[in-house]
Image (cartoon, rainbow, N blue to C red; front, top):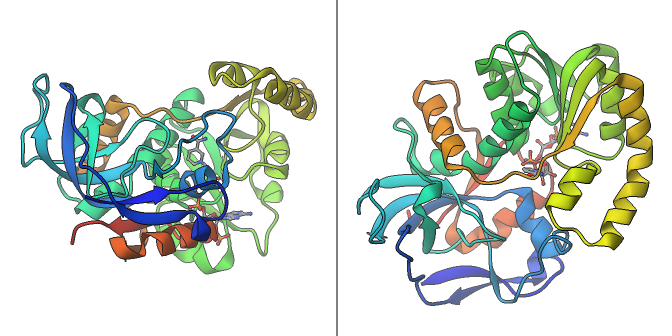
Length: 334
Ligand SMILES: NC(=O)c1ccc[n+]([C@@H]2O[C@H](COP(=O)([O-])OP(=O)(O)OC[C@H]3O[C@@H](n4cnc5c(N)ncnc54)[C@H](OP(=O)(O)O)[C@@H]3O)[C@@H](O)[C@H]2O)c1
């Protein structure tokens, strides 16, 4: 089968190639899925760059891609809840498990039926950003009436997070640049802050939760936006002590992180805040929750561009610009 492979650490354009490799053999608890659509995420190019080396080093050539929607073509002896021909979607587990390929083997514990109203491309756009967001807002114990600030409302995460937080009855502030303001408003955000013209810290005040998708100064400044006792949940900021331990980082990285945390710890104390770094874990219950939200009309995919499989490297290069308006799809099978 045809698969996109990572050949080494470095830049996207120099370290990816298409190859013919063996179709995966499934285990008793797995399904073999013919991939129709996959979506890209920033983690794909970060893995190629080597940013996830402290968590796990790759053996090259390595497969690439996490999100998938497709059709079950084979099932293991222990798989009871899926049949050949079922349309499914998933966020596959493991370090770069390889959804940018014609077939992928997936543990049935991570597979859910495709949302009824969505195309396979729409379904492939949701799992990673959706599960991440559910885990972030679970950590924040989001409740009706909470004021939340979601950074980068026009990104893959932001477009899902706005719709999800609204479905839970939150008041949503979000940031984006001028060109995206109008369509981001249509996702349901209560106050879209144009970061080219406005300072979000003058507008989003005393919020209950900041969903930090940008890191660096945005993480520190999040403590200015929250009320006393508020929560800052980050995807890209400095890792908290527990997360660093859980991820098995070695003593050197943990030491560097402890230095970086000095400033954050002062902010946490000053605001009696809850601070947590989330590294999403795939979770079937949450993938199926996304299906329900889509079936009930609370979540609509936001797709910026669709690329044919032959242009998957271009898709990743576009993802890397950091300017995507929602999600990017690779159409593996037309
Ligand atoms: N820890 C985890 O488990 C986890 C999970 C998922 C994602 N992540 C990370 O979360 C980050 C966001 O992911 P994503 O999928 O949303 O990325 P993305 O789709 O690439 O985000 C692109 C969007 O970011 C916006 N943006 C860039 N700079 C901005 C700024 N200063 N203020 C407001 N908006 C800005 C851009 O809008 P403009 O063009 O208008 O600026 C663009 O629409 C990535 O770093 C990703 O790796 C981590």
